[in-house]
Length: 135
Image 1 (cartoon, rainbow, N blue to C red):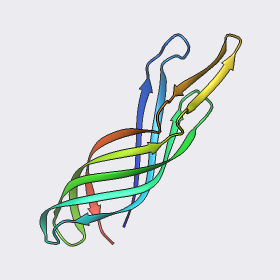
Image 2 (cartoon, helix red, strand yellow):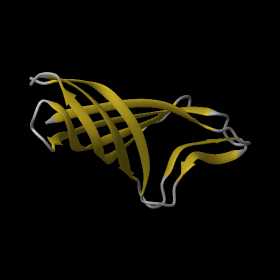
Image 3 (cartoon, rainbow, N blue to C red):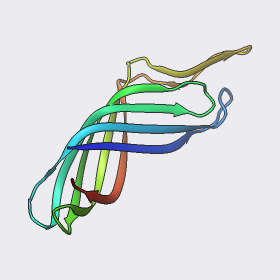
Image 4 (tube, rainbow, N blue to C red):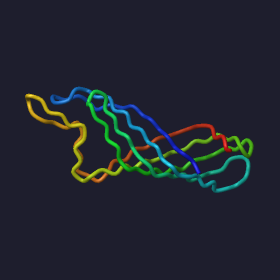
């Protein structure tokens, strides 16, 4: 079993309605890892989890929390039963309502939203490397 946390900062490009806006995307998932071999040394694995995505644009005055899931494929090198290093590719899927509007504001010139979606979700990928300490 594992708890997975990831935090990334990105940005939306500026336009006439919204200036360039920094966006922090955080994932927190509960899940697990399945090693495809159970020996010391190099082993491929599959990992996954389900949890939440927090979208937080700076300066917009709002955050959005949405349901998400992740799936990873990787390689793990075990030095001992309790210590290893691993590299992986992980994909995230976050569920959105079909007509989502996020981070909206209005002023004297009208109303606008930073994010408008016409789909049911968005996907993101990461390449990761790290150390594993087993309990």
